Length: 381
Image (cartoon, rainbow, N blue to C red; front, side, top):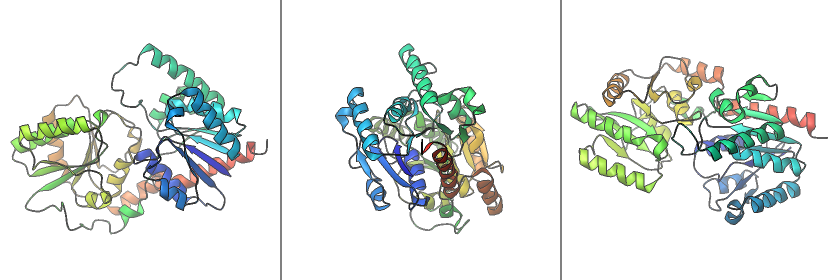
């Protein structure tokens, strides 16, 4: 089977990490996986090529002009003779799958990864945007042969509520390489940012942007300082420079440099998780955050906003869900409790991973089975 993944840039991000799990684990003698990208220097470009995939650059000019974009994508699909197009571009998938239909691609997959759109933080979209959603949702449901979502919230947002009853729909949770987190389970890593001198680490892993709500983390740090609690928040990730500058100004104003640290993009997130006593994620919305799976796979107590599906919860008593309407003091109260809770027993963590399918190998097998099923049904038509 020959598969074309259409998933934005394939730079650093949760979706991109998820798709890399697939290409690393799938039997590449049976499945050829290619990717489109609008970023020539994308983070995963070289690894995709090393794994036997083609990394196909879409010109920025065509990306900004729908007709040129459609022509370019049509040409790629037609000349590539793909059996499957797997689109991960939210409502834009409506256009991608329509093109795939025109190009004669028999198996067309739409994959929902979010229950909100982009950086939109308002409760209501503009009339034009709502019309776009209706048209693209109709196109997705018309031209996709299989629909997948990482959560029921994401499924309803992209496909509509009726999709949950369709035979062509599958709910497949996001996943991580859990072996990284289960190996040496409970062992404390030494070195930089190790807990010492009575300090407890709370880790946050998120791109710096408005929807990830780092402002609340700074306010929590201020509250912890006022209480004279030796709890520091370590923020992993990079992003919007203006937001970073505003956060730094607040940190200086509150004099909380010891209570919240921004450490940038790191390649040792698994080690930082193992050096922490709790995890925090106050996002305004998520799809199914991989970092929540990683944090629970390490056994960390987690404090998170109730702004996305609770299907990510391992259900072993380690996740506290809070409303963003709760005041800063309440968030600080919960953190104080969680850093003293300790890690979950390894056997409970492993059972939850296997039961819910949070491991990347399980994810890969489920996607492959859907490819095979749809290909056997339509591939020779």
